[in-house]
Length: 236
Image (cartoon, rainbow, N blue to C red; front, side, top):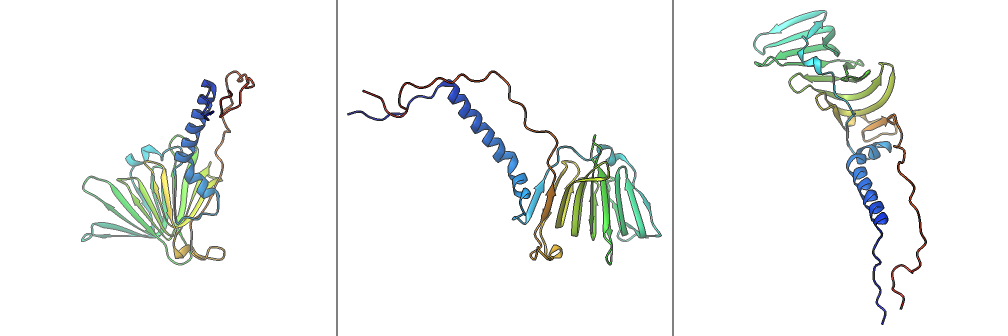
């Protein structure tokens, strides 16, 4: 009785199958987040990592602040600025109705900007080596100078800009954190961003396609030869 057996694959077919598996693995590893946000976001947490980092020299720059008023709380070791506050540190800009500034024993500075009424606090930072910026708005903005971490809380929105004018990406959420060291930000859902068409306050994002298409194919075309045998069974 003839028994079925699997025909051995040719070297070219094995190579093609291996290349397909490697490509699928890369898609699974790197493409899931982009695929999720390309649709109306079903998840309550979004993580997105651009390809560059925040301006490295910002950590070494002094913190400059302009405001209508300033008070110093010696008990809490905090400087409180109020009234049209503008804080700058290198390429970092924070604008708010009030900004509280503290400094730890190692010299790292921390700033919290808050706004009242319909106005939102504002944040912007340049990306290292690119003519691009990360900017955002929220009721409260916390900047951690030690970790280069910015947290935008309540009615938060973060945008990636090209040349300060062209919006490439835009993310809306209740809480958005931007890690300037890793150039990575996350967004969480919340009731404060609920509204018509988004009753549960889910994260919303618009992500523009990156420049550059698929790499061109290279190498000589494969020569196909018809098989003289049926695949899967051996003929007697």
